Each structure stands twice: as structure tokens, then as C-alpha cells.
Image (cartoon, rainbow, N blue to C red; front, side, top):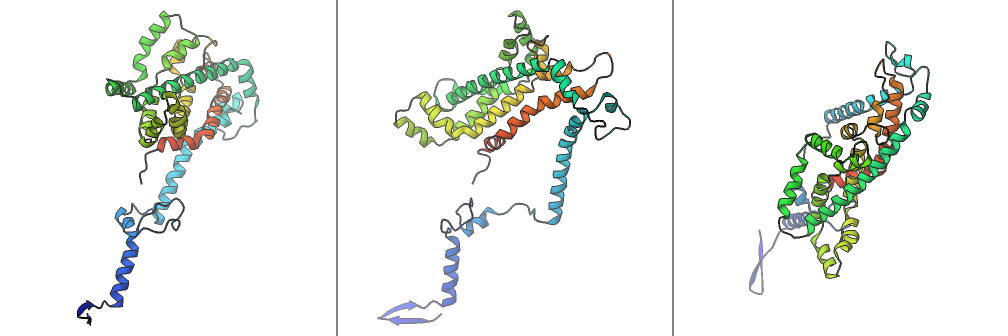
Length: 331
């Protein structure tokens, strides 16, 4: 390295190659200019990218083939049973029990759906399922949100102990409490009634746990700002907390609707007549107890029972996925 003197001072003369290398290294460590990165990509430097490291390499042809095979196998495991349910609902009695099995109805019999709708009490079962599911969903969502809001933002003695009890309730199978619930409902005269079906199923441990964890992930600064603005208890809940919680709340609502719509064991025990029988229980009454069951009308009823939940899921699937994955990815 060469040197030169300027007015009695010795200064170092840095070669251009070394200076350019240092400048390039410095530019690489600096974060990129905002707007220059791809959409949705975080603003980080090249050094930070290297420190983050990389996961497994899924770009190899073998990994891609394995991934597609696993995907195809999973889709087949789900779709094949659904396919047989649908085609069986259009078969005749003889075609259902034909040997070998047929993979397409011949002849095509759409009258199974009319038979189920008109002669099996399906309309009563549908009315009961819709009413009971809506009432249970409203009760569980209201109680779940209110209790979660209290556990997340209110300070009171024994709060942590009470929340541990809620967690413990999640670990207790519902089947354990069936006998005691049945004895209590029968003593109150609730057998074969809507309240007998609804009240024992109105526990909200899961919803309280889900919403409380989400509420605690909300920015504390926003709640402090609401307090400074003089927002009350319900004002903060309905105008601050819930608008920021729509994905998680949608997931809670969808899970609750599907669970209550498919509930079978408790309605089966507590109901005796079509007055309060729900669809899952009503489907079992389509079977012939004395001879061979005509599975075509049973499968038609199954399709009609499943269709409303498929529509609800398609409408809320994006919100459900956002709610269930909220907070799962950090970056």
C-alpha cells in the first residue's frame, strides 16, 4: 500500500479495488429501498437473509413427485367415499345390492330425493336441526366472546385459576357427563324438547380458549388509546376488539355450526319423536330394521344433510383459515 504526504500529514492511499469491495459489502448489509422488494416480501438485508438460513430443498424432481403423489392419495381418500355416497343416492334398490358393484347408477333414479323429502319426516328433522344449530351457535358465540374478553382484559381475583378450569373442561370427554346430564334433563321434564337438546350442549370452553388467546395477541397500544378516548366496556368490545378479530371469530362460528349440526349422541339419547329429532338422528330412522336397508334413500338424505354445511364452509373458508393460522407465522 502506497502513502503520500499532504501538508506534513501522512494519509493512506487505499487501492480502488479494496475500496470498491468494501462499498459493495456495505451496500449488501444495508436494507433495500422500500418498494424495491417483491410484494409482500419483508424489507431485510442480504446478511439477514443469510442468517435466516433455508429449509429443506423441495425443488428437486423427486420431492415434487412425492408431494404430488401424497396430494393425489389424500384427495382420493376424501373424494372416493363422497363419490359413492352421491352415486348410491341415485341408484335403485336392486342396483345397490348388485354383484359386482356398479360405479354408475343404471338406471338413474332421482326419485330417492323426493321420497326422502316427502315421506320420511325429513322436513321436521331439517327444521329442528336449523333451529337448534342457530340457537346453540348464538349462545356459544356470545358466551365465548364475553368470557374470553373478560379473561383477556379484565383484572379480578382468581382469573388465572378460573381459566385453568376452562382448560380442564376441554380435557373432559363429553361422554363422561352424559349420564348425569340425562338424569338431570329427565327430572326437569326436558326429554324430547328443544331445551333438553340445547342447554346441556351450551358449554363454551373451546370458544373461550380460542378467542381469549386471540384477544391477548391484539396490540396493547390500541386498547390504551381506546381507554384514553373514554371508551367503555362494550364500546371497546364492539368497536375496537371485534372488528380486529373477524377471521378468528369466523373460524369460531364455522366450527360451532358444523359441530352442532353433526351432533348425534346427545340428541339420540334425549329425543324420542320427530318433535325434537335432528337430521343425524333422523337418518338412522330411514333404515329398515326388519330387512335389508334400502341405502339409496339413506344416501339421498345424507347428501341433503351434508349440503348446507358444504355451502357454509365455502362461504367462510378463507376467514376460517386466517383465524386458525393467526399468530402461527412470525416474521
